Image 1 (cartoon, rainbow, N blue to C red):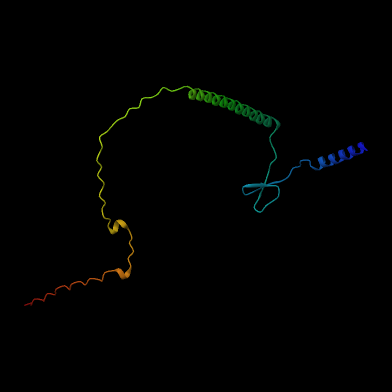
Image 2 (cartoon, rainbow, N blue to C red):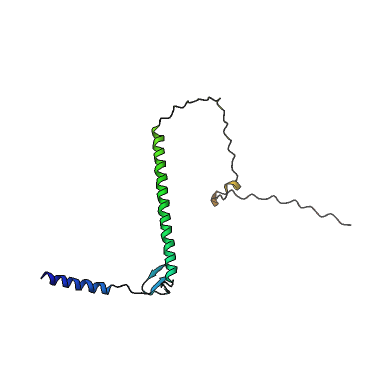
Length: 152
């Protein structure tokens, strides 16, 4: 009975593994996102690796070297931060000598406030007026007419 269950389980696992094999699928770029299904205005991308084995090995070596360099830099940074923290703790624990406070007295200075100027209409900008509140228009004095002189 137990072997029968194991054989059924083995068959189910084998069929599921067979059905989920990675296969090449089309990749579409839709604006700023990528999708496996085509979209309107989407472009089909070629994602095949066309490098020969020597080029691939060279790029992999460069990537591995960069990763090791990044790990070394991180270790150095962490060591420096730890040393800085240790010096800060020592600095905080050492007592500082008291400092002398010097009091300086100055003569009081008399300050005169600025006088405010009245702002003109130009300085205020646009001022709305109610039509009823206007003053009645002033009448201009008529100009004196001079009589034409007699011409000889």
